[in-house]
Length: 314
Image (cartoon, rainbow, N blue to C red; front, side):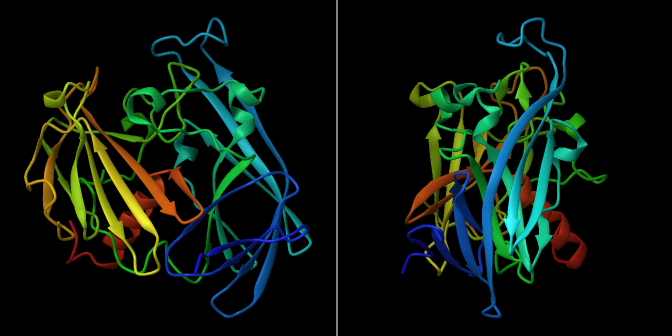
């Protein structure tokens, strides 16, 4: 049975808690009923969304400029069980690496708003759709991920995907300081993933058991990069798709299952630009849609799990 059930207004969606995080896109005025693990139900309504530029180095706000920096904020006003709650994020700064809203027993990750994009009157353009089919812009007014706050994003610990920066994630280590999720590459191009700077041929490990994996782009096939994709189907039916780009080589043959913690590839080194880095992508595919979301959600859990299990994970 689908986790998401469409209903007539005023309760547009009915969602039941499960053991993996749930993505959903909503329009202003939409509401959802979220059933917690305890059985308690929380009503969440989208009241408003916004996006605004805080600072920019662009000479022309409509024209991308190599290396130009732009900082912006985006937000959403929710009504949760009758109480108004505003959530705002800032990118690309240290605040890009954020914690979810924790309210009424629910965690809500604010992943993106349509208002930031040019087609909706904003300023951002898509960067990675033509080459890697990564679309940052929500199809509705806001994209969120939701979970019972007593649960984690998935029911098992995650192994680091790559060596985690010891001091934590820093925006300075995301290519030129702009390439977090939806960071403003060249000033106005939404970055479709999370870049982590590290030397060429840095090891990449499987964060969790991978059912199947392969290159979906490669220089050998005539593409402009080596891009890897691995999939994991959870028992509840949710399909997680992990991608790593700029991969110089695999260490496990394609279409062979990978165990959590196994090195499957080397990172960085293929068309990685002015700074060697790996580009990480996180997709979640459900019966009701496909969502590309912030990989930081995975890396935040990797940091938490490394603290919880220091002898088990790197």
